[in-house]
Amino acid sequence: MKLPVSYSIRSMLNRPSRSLMTSGGVAIAIFLSVTMLALGKGLSRTAVSSAEPLNLIVMSYGAVSQEFSAVEPAYIRAMASLESVGNGVELSPELYINTMAQAGKQPAAAVLTRGLRSETAGLHPKVRVAEGRLPERGSEVALGPLVATRLGLDARQLGIGSGISFEGQQWEVVGILAAPGTAYESEIWAPLEELMAAARRDDYSIVITRAADMATLEDVRFDLDTRTDIRTTVVSETEYYARESERLKPVLAVCSIMTLLLVSGGAMAGMNTMFNSVMGRINELAVLLLLGYRRFEVVGGIMLEGLTLCLLGGLLGSATGLLLSGVPMKFSMSAFRFVVDRDVLLSGIGLAALIGVIGSLVPSLRLRRLSIAAGLRTAK
Image (cartoon, rainbow, N blue to C red; front, side, top):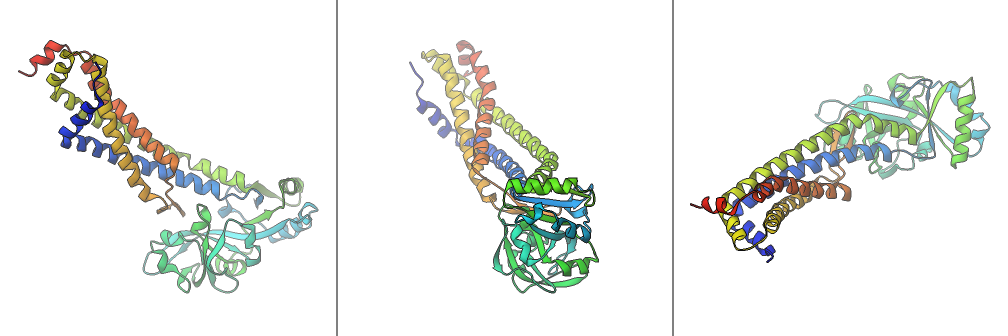
C-alpha cells in the first residue's frame, strides 16, 4: 500500500518548532544567496547596459581607461577632416575625470565627472533629463540619481538648486539625470570648458564618436586606426564596457563562492535537523515498515518532508530578497543597484530545492539500512 502524502504534512505540523527551525534556517541562507546573486547581476548589468552600439570611444594612444586618457585638441580638428566623419558622424570631445566631491556635512567621496557640451549630450541616448535641465554655462551641474548614494546623502538632499563642491569650487545643481541600470546614474555632468578650467586641463579625456549605422562606424574606425597623424586608441562602447565587465569577474567569483558557502551551510543545517527528526521517530518509521509500507515509500516521505520545508524557506527567502531590487549601493568610484529578476528568484528557489535534497539524503540513507527489529527496540 502507498504511504499517503498527508503523513508527511502531519509530521511537519506535529513538530512545529523543528519545522520552523528548518524553514527559517533555509530562508536566511537563501536570502543571503539572493543578495549575492543580485549584487553580481547589478554589477554586470550596469557595465553591459551602459554601452551604445553606434558609439566609438577615442582615447589617447595606449590608454585602457577613459579616466586616464588625454586627447590633444589638434586631434579633434584632424578627426573632423576625415571623409568618413563627414557622413553624418557626430563628435563630442569630453573630459572624464575622477574627482573628490562633497555635499552637505558628509565627507568628500570619489565621483566620476563628465564634462561635455549640452548640444552633444544626445550622443548618450540612454541618458535623459528627469528634472530640470542640462548644465549650459558657469558652475552648473546635472547629477545622476546615484551621486547622492556616493556622497552618503538621500536623493532629496541633492535636488535642483542644491550645491555640491569639487575641483576647488561650488557648483549649482540644475538638473537630475535618468539612465536606469547604467553607469551614468552615478556621474556628474558639467559644462566642458568650465570643468576643464576647474581641473586645470588643456586637453580632453575622450572623444565620443556616433555614427548613423554600423557600416559608417567601421569606416570611421578604420580611418582612425590607419591615420599616422592621429595616434589614438579606438574602441567601440560595446567592447569597452564588455572589457569593464571582465574586470568585475573577481568580484563575481567572490559572490559565487559566498553563495556556495551559504548553500553548503544551509544543506548541513538541513541535514542535521532532518537527521535528528528521523532519529527522534525511528520507532514510528519502523512501525510503518511493519504495517507493510514499502521502504522506498517511507524514504520518499522523508525526502518529501525535507524538500517541502526547504522550498517553503526558499520561497520566503526569495520573497524577502525582492525588497533589495533597485536598492543602491556604493562600489569603487561609482554606485549600482541590486537587481532581483526572475533568474535570481528562480536560482534562489532552485538552491532551496538543492538544500532540501542534500539535507534529506543522509537521514534517508540511514532509514534504508534500518531493520524493523532494531527500530522497534529503539522505542523501549
